[in-house]
Image (cartoon, rainbow, N blue to C red; front, side):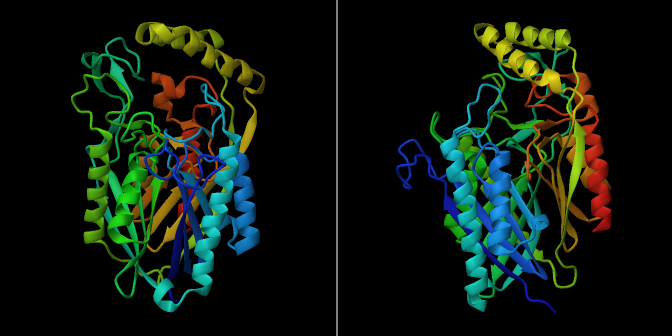
Length: 431
């Protein structure tokens, strides 16, 4: 019988190169948090308080982790919490990537993994031998499927009147799994939780922040010790209720209340958590290439869709909005139909499975994987090991709307999401 071991660490990502201390512009740290779990083989999970982890950072960080720790490439999952309140790591939609911040992000990822690995290698049995606990909690009130059908037949983005809303165009996943690594003395080495909502919401407008999920993670650490990681789910079609839309949205939940409700849901999971015997059903991992194509589009139709929305719902910024999407389409036009490659990952933890997908997967697709999975419990980890933007289902493409307007934020062809579901299910079947 193998002994389960785990160690975790969180390293602050410096917002300004001149200082590692908290900037006056921050309401809380932006962090790279790493968990290294050993059960027959080592598994490394990393969560970063950024919008995305850009490709060059992922590539370099993964290579260095493999070289410096010996954790296999297939067993490394790196994701972003998708906070909208950090220096930009994207170069689309009018964002301009902060290369200095990306360099510091890279170093923080590697440092967090190295610190956790050193503890695992050098720590006493009391420090590193753990029991793996799991419960499925729920939080149904902070988020919703935000792709509302409006009375004019379009799909909502923001700035629409609440009275124009007819219904959500898809499902919302309220499940919130909680994983805990508990030492023999009862203290927690790490807590991991997952939820399928955009991480938009700072306590103070204009401040840099890990967002309401990151704030909840740090609140949980203050309560329990250890290191808490948030892993985003299939959140591409879901937002927290106060993030977008009309200010008259009576269902909107402020960021501080979102932090409270998420923390309460994780606390409920910790109370209910039961042991998972990983020595009987050990950790197993698959990471495989996934091929997809750049979408093809009709320029006139795309221009008309953006123009209609911008002029109706954002007239003051209509020209600049139209230019952003027009420029992206012009950049994409020469590579329409081009085949590209990304990664899918499947992780088995006893009778629990995690599926790492490389973007902002729509909830309907995530639920399809969960429904058809051979495992009793299956959860999606979005923005895992790459990002190809929004990953919509075919019905979503038919409805249109911001997430699926043509652009680098939504670069894959219709059907990509369904193909991803099928390959993920094949990989889960192998596990």
